[in-house]
Amino acid sequence: MSDVLQQLAQILEQRKLESADKSYVASLYAKGLDSILKKIGEEATETVIAAKGGDKQQIIYETADLWFHCLVLLADQGLGPDDVLQELQRRFGLSGLEEKAQRNK
Image 1 (cartoon, helix red, strand yellow):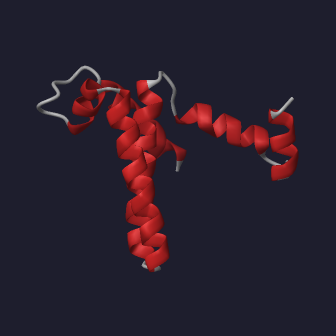
Image 2: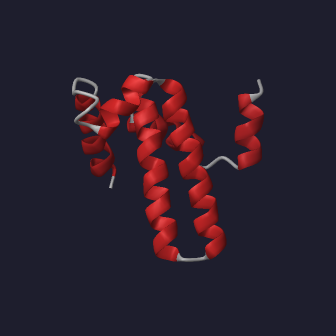
């Protein structure tokens, strides 16, 4: 599955070089960080609403939109899915309480 994330990350990097009037992602980059963050907030809200509605297909759809826009943010910040996957790997096997305590040190 992470192959899909890597392929998408490569496309998102390419979109940085494209015209904002021909690419949705390029237009987000052109509008700046606040627009990307606003979109993530919108998609997070839509994901919550879908979950409350209980329609599994809608939850998948909205979560995909949320993940996509989070990948746009990562690319905008010079990061990629591997950075997040490495952090998740670091946390693997730790309880949430242990992990949180380690962050506060």
